[in-house]
Length: 354
Image (cartoon, rainbow, N blue to C red):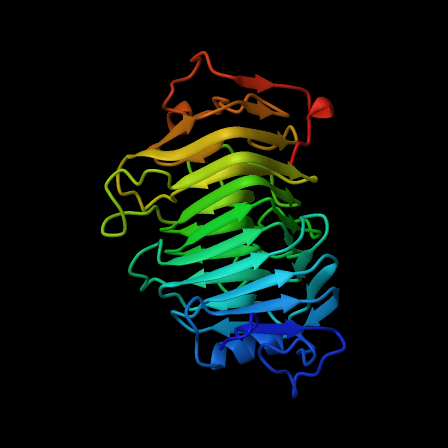
């Protein structure tokens, strides 16, 4: 007969990595990394193992990698926090893809956090059979990075990297702080390639010290974006219309600091696969960007449709702002000047609802 915790690894600051026993809360692991590594090398139960992380302050100085097709869940008790200090540029948690789920949950985005000096999560691979096969689910926790250098695929300049996977963020804060200024710095809060992104009741924010927006056709090559999409989902990974590729609901988007930046940059030049209708859905989204930044979603070449399911409020220019050249702005459907619940308020009066 199975006990209720047969597939649970307990973690406690007073534990011991050498004597930890699955299912026994009296014999916990001491570090989160050691418990993850043990779960990754053990025979996998259906749905994977669960890490129950008791309250306390944890540290990590090495990255961890989970094999393809393996699932894991981590639950952080109130005031259980992880500070990651990696010796070189990389991501703290890496997943090789396959059909699996990585579930990270806490007790509230102001109560728990995972913080790293470089990237935090990197999931998926170019060999993924479907972007819905691997899920990264982040719930009720703050995930942040203090990256200060330009983006690289190895873990610099962003917080989450997803390739042909699905990222779901619920009641959480994703934060990137960039203390070092530099006009040539390239940074993204969330980088997705041929995958899906969904947010609900969450905050995406960046303290950007990068260069100012150049306002050219290929805008975004030398400053920060909250969401950067490298490749859009295309056949054979989904239907032709890619409905719901990016869905932001009850979400607060914030760019602050002395540098430039924008909200969402879609599909880089050279990767166009044609018009992707029904691709972006926004419902009750708040933009708060300083005057020098772009409050709009930007796409080049223009190929996406943005569907509005609720109010959009901007703390700067109107969120459907026509920044020249107008042909490259994304708000096609509904068209400009359509009578929608879109508002523009002063930054000083901007609400912070999430």
